[in-house]
Image (cartoon, rainbow, N blue to C red):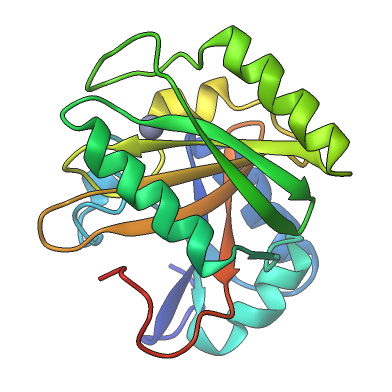
Length: 214
Ligand SMILES: [Zn+2]
């Protein structure tokens, strides 16, 4: 039994149940009731995570408080033209994954690099090391850092795969994923902390009507 009401909200996503339980205990210590729900317990939105799902659920009225308690709720500025560039490159690269690097600061992407996928695969990517180096030098000259990497999920959605989470460097590193599902492309951004996944809310200043994202 739990004290979460009928109106619930997901506050966190985790690769392993243990990490979700740690977060649940942290919330409990601050007086916020929550419960852990895994895919085999049913009822989750299909497609949000394609091959695993452990989520932490709270009462909808406490979602802001819970996110703050868990250190979530960060946002990331991504210019509309950067999103359009990644999407175009992703479509060009199909059926293979597209990939590249993100330059900017911890909370703003200033430029995206569209680089070669040496794996030339629809299910994985390896950024060309020489291009990687060139992008780093270019970013440095512009006064930016390489703050993350992006890749596409051809024909899929923008949720991180198990591999994406396991291979992410953690810290402030940003993982952006472009999903080019036929029903509508989408772009999402994440940080990982161990096996917990923190989605970053993307905002941009695209003029109304100029976004090409569905
Ligand atoms: Zn991926």
